Amino acid sequence: MANTRSAKKMVRKIARRTEVNTARRSRVRTYVRRVEEAIASGDKAAAEAALREAQPELMRAVTKGVMHKNTSARKISRLSARVKALA
Image 1: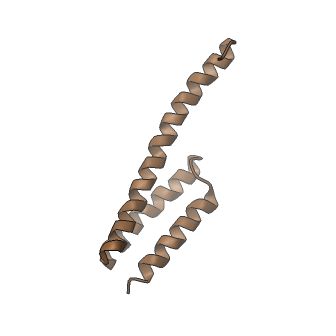
Image 2: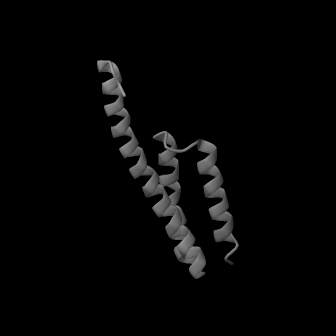
Image 3: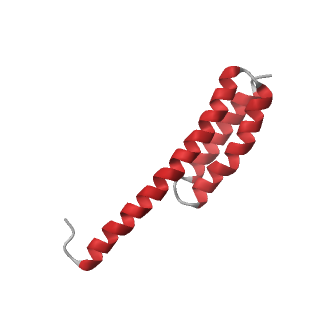
């Protein structure tokens, strides 16, 4: 357990940051899931629209430090390849 004042403060800061990051990660997963559901339904127009909404959300996660840049790029690349294959 934290003993010093600074250690106790860090525990509080980490708890707040963890809460924010969890919310951001959940938000990203929601957008990715919407794209995957549109792909599964076979609706190309809906899949493209969902992908256009998901891309900035994935990149925002990178700028906020929730996700690595390459992870985000890989997810976007794989999703767009799957959407393109719907034709």
